[in-house]
Image 1 (tube, helix red, strand yellow):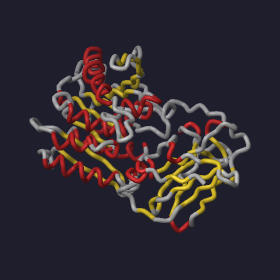
Image 2: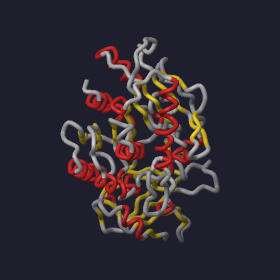
Image 3: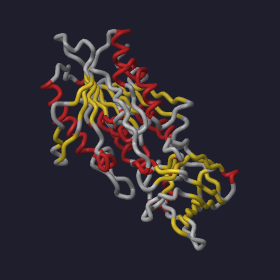
Image 4: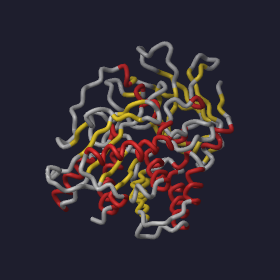
Length: 379
């Protein structure tokens, strides 16, 4: 049997509640049409939902079974089986999404798993666009000179954009998930619908610039520092693109208020990590930040940056987390709040919200987006 007992794995799970029992997962049944050259992975809350984590790859044991043995696991965690990326995640026999599996230490030391289908082996139904009529693509993709590649950008305009006034701008990561279910992976934030509603109810209007993530480059682009395994770390260059290239383009072509008080950075997960990083790295540019479910686990340098921050001006930061997310998320947010308070963020500048039912998911971020906007803009 393949046993995983690497130091990196233990470090990754150091803050979780362990059971000392060894646990083996067995793929007892997989679809008949599974490609012969497939590799199988467990992706869950214990490994940051990494669909291609080599430490969680199944191997063929002495009985010819695909098995994965873990020497130390949390007492409970959620997971799915996939073949190396989320496009190949398990589904039911009709190709529909299935709930996360739940491991609990009461289930025993051998977990038998049956997979009934793989997402990529079913015809993909075309989903109609849910973007509002006032969401547009920029005329061309935007060049990222730091990486010598281009990126799709979508822009939301408020209903009264035909007027002569200027508007605040919210810059957001993972643009595929911001406006449109047809481009999202697992749901959208409904930012356009929310802002249309706020315009009708409170006459609040702003522009939103949603930058698509770079697919396979997403982790590299949205991590300001390498992690302990020397993965990622191009986030500083991606931040430079926002500040030196994207923002000047937006300010030139659209009616914006370019000052810091009207420039907001916002994101979730790795995008939340980047939003906090950029707010602290470029306080003269971003006067406000929405930090949703930030991946502060990525590097200890995130906390070092906070501790070294020299606060010289008013700045508003909204941090969101959910108790149903990774077990390290809430403690990391609490640690971040303590540091940010110590460097000068008072109650009027820093709000931390922890939702008991919050999951690491677009539906959660979509639900909390209106409250974040209202607080950041004093509505």
